[in-house]
Length: 269
Figure 1 (spheres, helix red, strand yellow):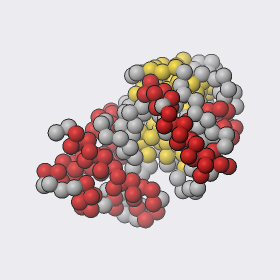
Figure 2: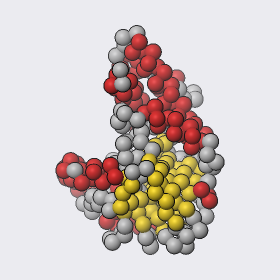
Figure 3: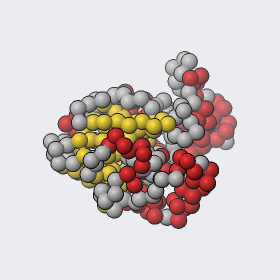
Figure 4: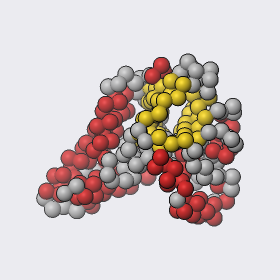
């Protein structure tokens, strides 16, 4: 990948074609782990970590933190709220019941240090800047290492399309991705999918823009979210042949993405 950066990618339990990626940034002062994946064993390549950062509170990004006992954990303040809510523990219990082998060692460890907008870590020779970028979730954070031209994007960016989990910040999300695509970043690591460059940021923003345009037009004609989705299949937004190679997840998620955009637009009326 890059000097001082190590990536670990794991497939989600029960899915061989939907990987999730974590990273470690090794400075002379701190070794910063960004996301801890699903279980502590996933973190074996990241021995010696001195700080943990969550890009957001989704289970596949933060259930492996028990691999680092006593290591400070940093995240957005909304991530802490979500991970300390009763629903978080209930969800882990449900996942353990379904697949004990995959989740027996998983633990929920909320961030002890939180921030609202931006936090800078001096890792020693490398700056690790945490920026709040709501969109995928309200607590989403991207991690910028300017000396390396690196953006660890969490689920703010995915290949081939982003997952719009929550309405409320979708249009702002696209604007921020476009801004980052012009900010001198040369290496982009998405939470799901192969790393790329600034073109990956621009492509995710363009996809969101296209959904907003279609939803605005459809709502003006009195269409439902399903009717709008029927007129904008995923194949119309991706190069020929790509859709056929995708996991089923993304074909279904495209439909759900349109529903989230519609919900945001309707709430703003």
